[in-house]
Picture 1 (tube, rainbow, N blue to C red):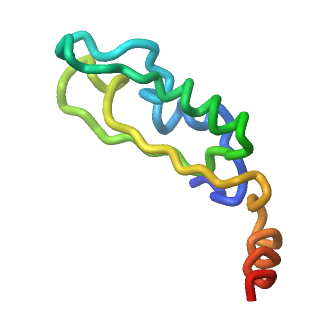
Picture 2 (picture 1 turned 60 degrees about the horizontal axis):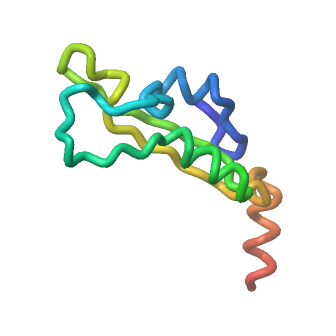
Length: 94
């Protein structure tokens, strides 16, 4: 399990949620489906100061679809990546 107060590396994300790095949609998707690569969203979040702290991916029973399945990333702003920073921010709000 990863520490949610530390940013995850791309390698750590790829181990638990490889579908984050899919470059195209699963081949069986409809033409109406609009694909947005998650890794581009990930890059944008990092550029704006948000770091990935948790990644997860659902399991899939369809052969060949595991690399394209549903996934989730959780982010935390880099100002709040340690317990001390979180406690300080909460105390300032009082």
